[in-house]
Structure formats: C-alpha cells, structure tokens
Image 1 (tube, rainbow, N blue to C red):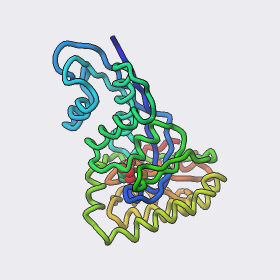
Image 2 (image 1 turned 135 degrees about the horizontal axis):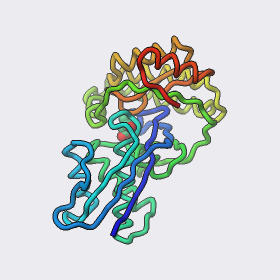
Image 3 (image 1 turned 45 degrees about the vertical axis):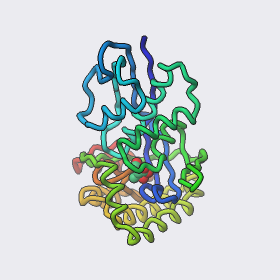
Image 4 (image 1 turned 90 degrees about the horizontal axis):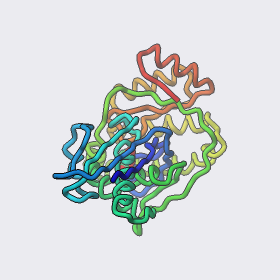
Length: 282
Ligand code: MEV
C-alpha cells in the first residue's frame, strides 16, 4: 500500500526570530513544496530513495512512523536551508502521509501535533509558524501566546516579491540558538521587529510596496543587529536597493538563505540581480 502527503514551503515576510519570543510575524505559503510517499516494506523504516544527508532525518521519520515496515520517498522543489520552509513542509507532508497510512483523520490538531514533533527535531525551539503556514497555506499572521499559538489568515495584496538566492544555506536551529544566547541584549531589537510588523499590516493588505519596502529595510537591519545576517545577505540587500528595490530583507532564519525584495519594476530588478551573479525569481 502507498500513502502520500504534500505541503507547500513558505516565506516569512516579516517577524522571523521575534516570533520565537511571542512577537507577531507574517508568513505566506509558496507555490513550491514537498511530497512524501510511504510504501510498505520489510525491515526497518527508512528512506527508499536517498535524500539529504542529515542525521536528524532518521529521528524525524521515527517520530511519526513505526520503527519498522515503512519505506519513505521524499521529493521537493524547495531549496534546503534557504529560509523557504523545507523542514516545515517536510514535517507537514510527513504528518499527512503518516495519518493517511494509519487511517486517522487529518485534522489541524493531528497534522499540527505530528508536524511540531518533527520541527522540534530539526529546530529545537520552533515558534511553530513554519509548519502552521505550510499546513494552512495562504498568508498568516501568527504569534505564540502562553496558552498556545494564535494565528489568523491575513489579507495580502498580490505582491511582486522577488526572491534572491544567496547560494548559501543557513541552519535554523543554530541561528535560533545564537539569538537565545544574546539574552536580554536582544530583547529591544526583537520588540522593535514586533512593532514594525504590526505597523506594516495595513500596507501589506493595500499592497503599498513603498511602505512595505521601507519596513523590510528596517526589519533587515534589526535582524542584522541580532547577528543572523551575513555579509553576503547584506551585500544582496544593498545591491537590490541600488537596483531599484523599494526595500529588501533576509527571509527565514538567516545565516544564509534568500533575500526578498519589492520593486515597481520586478523584471528589471531580477535582470540586475542576475547580472550581478545572483539567481533571482518571483
Ligand atoms: C524560521 O523559518 C523562522 C524563525 O523565526 C524560527 C521559528 O520561528 O521557529 C527563525
């Protein structure tokens, strides 16, 4: 018997890292994602077809599947470690396939619970935004509260978002731990990110790319202040601004990954970034 699950990846438009500490963030699902196929087999549960070489993967499979009898195939068009939600999408796709295999109903509570257990293996202290947006799709406003996650769909105007790949990968667990290690000295920056997110929600709904661009610019430099940017990501942000972006920021955990930018002429921005050697797409 074969059982499958799919989930899309995501981009965090604003609020990454601050969301771990209870501040609001905004994320949207993207039109790329991860498929998981489970097939019955003899012997220990494991990958049928090699995928990434990450020791956490075996623990993730064992968190949601029986120890023996399941072959797993993972197919994804999400770049790994680029802030586009590859692990959140894997967590949800795996949860959906595992629930389908056991004949259980795929409620948000069931999918979300299993996906969170996978995310904890990959990320240690995930806010939950990544797997939640992969599970719900669309765009979400999300924050952690003492009683659990609070999220609601958010109206987003169609935004001409340009994604620029730094061609380097970051490790979310490492970046989240590095912010935690800053302790109270990071609190002011994280609170400023939260305030900026709240203030930008009307512009996101209206599609005011000048206001959003300015907010992304500020969000990026606040992320830089807590140490999660890199010289390459900063260089891409500067280059995007020089090429006419209204603003740009790293998206996701940082330490590598992608920059997102807005421009009145996205095709011109993409061309200019390509000419500078960066792969860019909408
Ligand atoms: C990673 O996509 C987003 C972070 O805020 C971590 C998290 O929310 O779990 C950096």
